[in-house]
Image (cartoon, rainbow, N blue to C red):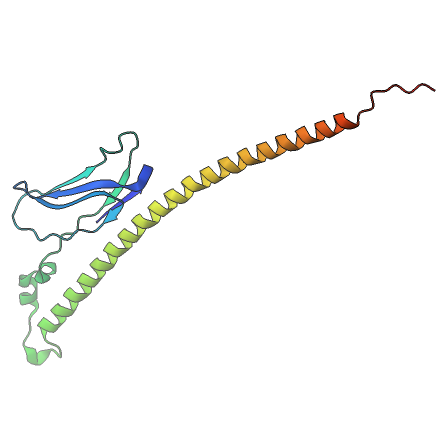
Length: 170
């Protein structure tokens, strides 16, 4: 998952390259994306973010790499074997409890990932809001300055129109 949080245009290029050099995923000038790739080989995968089309502006990018394990990876088999008791002594089977715990673990992990993604979206929206607030404040101040200048100029012009330059002699 990648998400551009701050910077001009809010877009970057993205490429995922396998250890042998094959391009697995690629996007050009996107603000966010989610890529799912099945690992085909062992080694170091490369994530490349490209901002070369926008050399003058820097970007802030949030990205998260999620590596999903096999269903039995959360708990070791040896730990369960040590805790095993004859089935007649327990009401539920040990395998049923293990499946339930693995399911809860997967759901909690997915919830954590979604909350992280929502925090990234919130950070991007907050940055845009603050940037827009600055622009609105600046142009409102400029408009107010122009209005006050025009008002003072009109008052001065009207007063000059009604100035009596004739001298009254009694």
